[in-house]
Image (cartoon, rainbow, N blue to C red; front, top):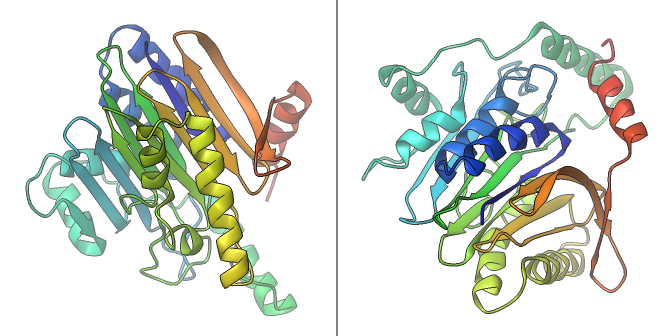
Length: 315
């Protein structure tokens, strides 16, 4: 059995690339990195990599993480700048015994010294969106923060090895140096090849208040299906936040176990992509359902057409 699941419609082309690797008996680690690089390289995705929206100063600060479910090795970067593929840097860091989580200038210098591709990650389109938001904030006193969609990929290969990765430009208009949950183990991601893997997308400030990715893997290890584990972890934590904090930001979790079964839970409308040995690649919409369950339906062509038009609309 092999399989992969990823957050958001933007990951679908990456899922197709990961499928080709996994179906050919390739390595789950290569599948995760390849899938996320596809998203990082596409300029019309506003929350990841090249074309990602900048912080309040107009600087694109990127976060990424990589975890090997066989060895528990983790590599991560936060606030890295001017590097084309943060996920590749994170994967390289995951094999380092020490200093495997690098931030800011230290992360950027490490990537440069290791020969990773330097690139100005602020596209003209993203700069125009940033300038427009600055004007809106000044003129209309709008909340500056918007957009925090992380690409997350969980992969299982035919040797029953598992890996997980995340990549994000973080919260649009964030303060310089802000870091969300995406590079944080247990919160933004977790993988254990003997059980499964999980990852999160959403408002990092709320997601990092819990360890939902780890909790989902733990629940799967105790016998829950991926869907049961996602539902239990996500809706219980959402309820806790609303009771204790008075509100809960948007967040969504994906999971896959080491048999290729998958699950999703969310407190908003959320798209994801999945492919397994037994299931053709497809995009789905998930939304909160009754009694702390999740409604999952195939996406429509009309929705896909509208999505494509929206992300490429003139600024």
